[in-house]
Image (tube, rainbow, N blue to C red; front, side, top):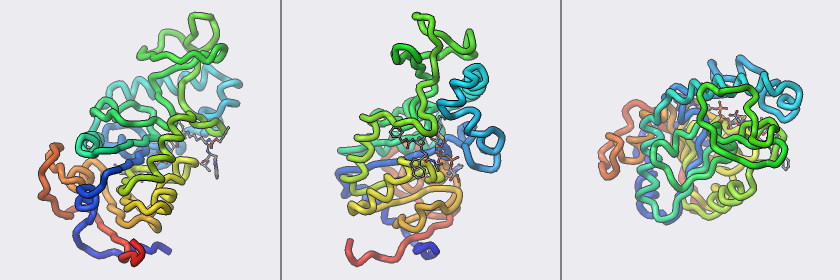
Length: 272
Ligand code: BJW
């Protein structure tokens, strides 16, 4: 049962942000959905059409690198046409205002960077980076479509996408920064993730455990809803700019109201 109780009222987020020295944001596929990037687990999600075991594991790549690369080539072609949306832009604007800030994204599409985010870690890698399976060298590759499948390194060995598949370790430095931010931030904002994939899904719990004010934006309740101080249900591109006080995508305007989002706020915590 969710601890949140539904009632209309003002979000405390902007006040918390004004006072906060350290802010962290965790994003998932939902933040890019309005840019046209498919999510994984939604009604039209990738895992509804494809089996993760066939495409997003090291075993799948060893078994059939051509099939895996064809899938990534299709996604790269689709994502190459996508632009950041107001949710990406609001997060980039939030970073410009925050003394200490970290954007922790599970997304591999590169849209946060395109929106102007700088202080970010990509926990699950980047679709536009490739890695040699022989010498582990990584490089950028923006070929759309790919010239050959699988693409090859100068050394002749196949390249793989520089993304994190199930059963693989996340990039150590990115993970360290993400945990540090979760443990030290005063505000932790979670946007557009189903919060089922570990270890990313633990970060909001860790932040909450260390005293952060946790706010979630999603189309629907998630496993995080019960621990979030505020949950806002609706499209991130519509909710976030208003929630953060950048209704026209620009920082500084404070005049937003909760008209379209269903807003749930937790009961006050006497220990905070
Ligand atoms: C909107 C919206 C709108 C829509 N506005 N909202 C502990 C317990 C159980 C299992 C494990 C565990 N620890 C590890 C595991 C195993 C596994 C795991 O978590 N499995 C679970 C699924 C059960 N984790 C791993 O294997 C990880 N590795 C690991 O832990 O290694 C340990 C190790 C250590 C040392 C040595 C070796 C190993 C790796 C996880 C890798 C995940 N990879 C993928 C693919 C990346 C590459 C690619 O893109 O091709 O990452 S899977 C996929 O899921 C992708 C995503 O980043 C990730 C999360 O998905 P996300 O972003 O949450 O998307 P959705 O679709 O699930 O949700 C979208 C949300 O948005 C929904 O809630 C919508 O409602 C919402 N939404 N439109 C706002 N407009």
